[in-house]
Length: 147
Image (tube, rainbow, N blue to C red; front, side):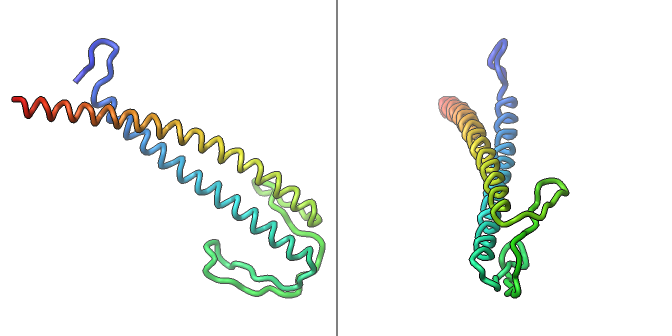
């Protein structure tokens, strides 16, 4: 069902809508991962603040989802080990750790904003294609009723 020379077929529209739907799903999964990273950074900063306050005990999640907590005692020290990226870690003082985490959070927040902009564009394009497909379907239904 071609729209003429230089036109687009119905199959092309359906394929594009399907591609965009999968792309949007992928962007949404990535967006969730970025938000989880931001939440993890906030949790790490709270833990550092707890250590800085002189508290010698802390509740620590054993798993990623927070199903199990363990009380950890005897926390001493003015240094923590921070993940720098890839397989690199560094032992730094608490204030430096917070600066590193703040920088990482800013980077992730910017990436999340860029991703959100891309998600909005993809969703807008997807909605336009769905509208066109709906119009085609309605026109076909009207033609069938007219026969």
